[in-house]
Length: 262
Image 1 (tube, one colour):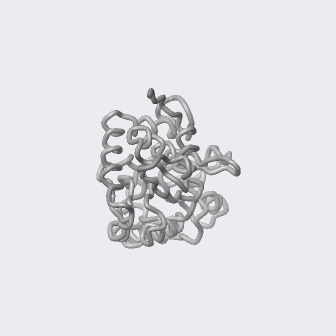
Image 2 (cartoon, one colour):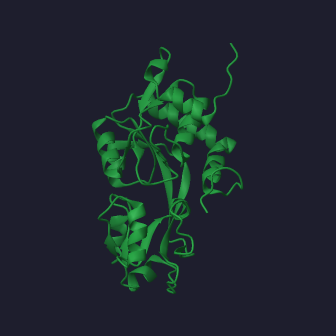
Image 3 (cartoon, helix red, strand yellow):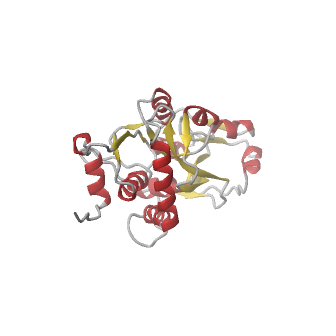
């Protein structure tokens, strides 16, 4: 029987239906992450889209024994960690490595992509920040998303952090309203939010990249034992073929085609 390749959307629709999985398929539950478009984008009545849904769809193409469910379940990072710990989710996509995550889950060693952290500021802000040390010396209040893995790192360097909300749109609006000077976030999400919220000319990105983090696919330690090796092999194939880089470029706008973030 000839098998025709699925589009990303078609693969997601298939993966979202557990009854469609053939006998012997490995069905893995996923929890998506809220407030971090375009890593995850959810619109009412539509399947989730974005970098992670595209990566998961690509995994099912190169490893047809795997099916994913739960892509419509979008939660905070704290809930994702809880689900991995309890085993109510088998997989989480594109999270940085932390001691807690290493304790409750297995990171597939091949990164999915590298996240670059930058600052957003009001367009008329004239400060020059080129490092985390500069940011600490500025004594500025920095907003960031509740539950972000790097909050403790920022505070350990003496940076005052407001992580009272998980809404990154709210965090952008805070700096425009003067409730904090900078918003610390990955540049992929910052570009996307500024464009989607029509904030060009009101908000700018400080040029310096303050930190780079590898983003991994995580497998709960309570997931089926065959999950991690199958996923590791699939992610390696996607990396070697350049597909992971193409997916990221498509959503970041670096490819010159497809969804754009600036």
